[in-house]
View (cartoon, rainbow, N blue to C red):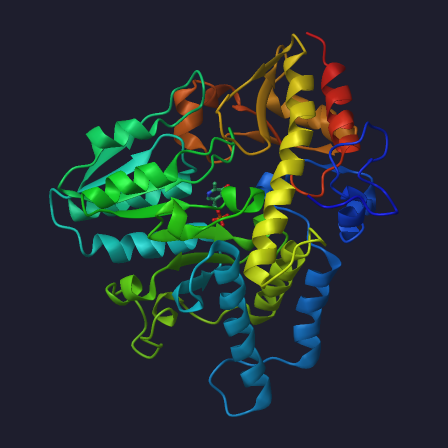
Length: 419
Ligand SMILES: Cc1ncc(COP(=O)(O)O)c(C=O)c1O
């Protein structure tokens, strides 16, 4: 864990100290956090540090061009693409040549689903989960329908929010081609045992498509340890710009033939990337990675090693602070909290008796607390929990820059909402 700096703001304003994470040092890197709001909406997108803003502005300042040209500005864009791939690979433990870049996870997942489904036969099977964000469900359902493939569902234990890995033994069979599963739920925070699920999938010769959009921001990631054949992530959830990525073994990508223009590159991973890329934003992705790797100033070694250490320290801090947040919410009689998974991210999902989730969010916004209300695209899960029609719930999530004061402000605001 990070030693507390002499400036000493492991003790955030207005509350007891939380661990030894120097949240004051971290917060000072984020210009947007000075506006007086408690940003508990990180699960919908984080703020970005000054270094990311500078990197994006710097790319434009230096001059960029489209790739493939004979002049230096074009070469600078090519280097930004390469550096962005290296950054994402360092974050999740992949190979730069296997990093497909795109506008966001949803767009890339549709692209991959279509390319994979082209290899499926009628009667093949795909397994999706009721826990997942719809971006890791609907593309597979629609692709399966076109291919004549059968869809099987992994169910959530609604009392706990767990996605029991054991059920995959009964769901995966010799016709299974793909198992799509989330590394963490964006509402309940549940972290399923992806490695066990992947082992079951691989035992039957199926591929895994792991949605790491929520998980990546909340701890170290190792795609090999997860058994993820495809791992999807979005930089805007981890202090970067709105860029998505899917990481896979380049040899696996070579086997797929996505729809593409006749004139565009047929190389991997470019084959999967449509149109002109946001080159300046790619500079921001690389800067976000450098930022994450430096979150724990005591972390040493390669950037991959530093990011693993920093994200482990960030996770420990988030979970400690989350204990305060969840404990405070659950102590209030008017609050119903969803999800009790044994392994989870610092993400609370709750309702308040007598108020709609939107009313709670508006009440909190008036007190300068940013939270989300609604299904947050956890469409199947909120349907299964039978809360979707009533506006679902309120989501308050922590990331590495949230302070004890943010949490106290949330708890105070919710406590004002007596039934
Ligand atoms: C768990 C999860 N999966 C997928 C997505 C979709 O990501 P994107 O906005 O990059 O398409 C989100 C976005 O909130 C998410 O939280």
